[in-house]
Amino acid sequence: MPEVTAAGSAAPPRVQRPSAETRWADELERLAARDRTTGARVPEGWRLSPRSVVDFVLGDAGRRDGLGLEAKFVGERALVERCVVALATDRGLMLVGEPGTAKSFLSELLAAAVSGDSTLTVQGTASTTEDAIKYSWNYALLLARGPSLDALVPAPVHRGMSEGAVVRFEEITRCPIETQDSLLSVLSDRVLVVPELADEHRVLHARRGFAVVATANIRDRGVNDMSAALKRRFNFETVHAIADVARETALVQRQSDAILAEAGITSGLPGDLTEVLVTLFGELRRGHTADGRPVEQLSTAMSTAEAVSVAVATGLASAWFTGAPPRGEDVVGAMLGSALKDSDDDRSRLRGYLTRVAKERGGRWQELYAARGLLDG
Ligand SMILES: Nc1ncnc2c1ncn2[C@@H]1O[C@H](COP(=O)(O)OP(=O)(O)O)[C@@H](O)[C@H]1O
Ligand SMILES: [Mg+2]
Image 1 (tube, rainbow, N blue to C red):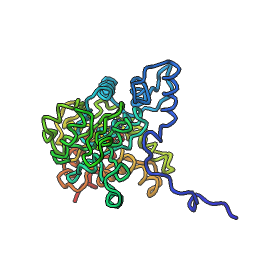
Image 2: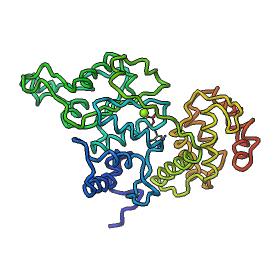
Image 3: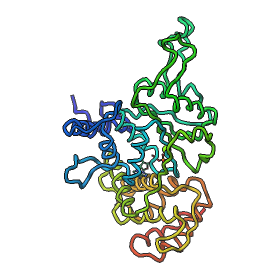
Image 4: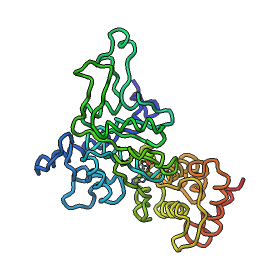
């Protein structure tokens, strides 16, 4: 038999994006082991001590007594500590901010570290109903045997309460207010009543470890679209875009290199080009250059997440089609599809930025300036 080649490999394709608890399973184990040896206090219903949760989220690179934990969320330690405290109290945690600031990623990391499971997730949309949050029924069983626990199909909040786990509620403000408010009694009384069930199963009391982490984008719809009653039950934390160019550049380089390596591409964006990309995104996001000159902002959120996807698109296009290391014009080309979407105004704003700002700078900036024609028509 001939050897199976990579192209015709018989192995099933891997999953596109393993969840955090799978991807970093060994780190979670090492942290749990450290908690056991040091006798760190682990809150009831949690997998790890609060300090270990924070270390997992931020990583501990460069620490002398570290466990070699990969850097994941880039942000203030104090913010992550406040998030962890909120989860340990009987309040919900609400992460708000611009799109692409890693609110979802942070909530995933927290759930993975606290409960070992980040998949109890409700995705909020205009059509999310209470069934998708709490529970629904298997109608065949319901008709055959009447309401019973067997016929009940638990949704994330039911499961989180009965298992004592963190439940994620993504984009909560996209849901109708009445649907959001179905969380009120869950958050204040920590009970879920299933009126159809017999007495002993009617009231579900949340086990320790149950908590809700919600996220909301301030661009989509305001958090004003949340009832005052529900707001009171959450601690709000704003997640800001990374302010420091060097830290953001390192993050974009690390994440895009990792994604490209998965595709078998070992030569990612050169460091100086990544820095130019991140500087450009940051200046357009903030509406002014580093030295304070005003810049017209784009309607697209120029987030770190978008910068990573532009870096990846640039790397793929050069590896697959030009065969040469990525250059400034490849970045401009990649931005057309992945960042600028369909907005003609954004194209001409970016063109204006390249004409006025990039032109005056040296190095890689000249490659971007020279490619400004790609943005015409
Ligand atoms: N501060 C950050 N730390 C780590 N990754 C970040 C950060 N900001 C953005 N990212 C990148 O952006 C991606 C998408 O973020 P996501 O969690 O979907 O954002 P949001 O939910 O705020 O819209 C993350 O997976 C990560 O690659
Ligand atoms: Mg999100």
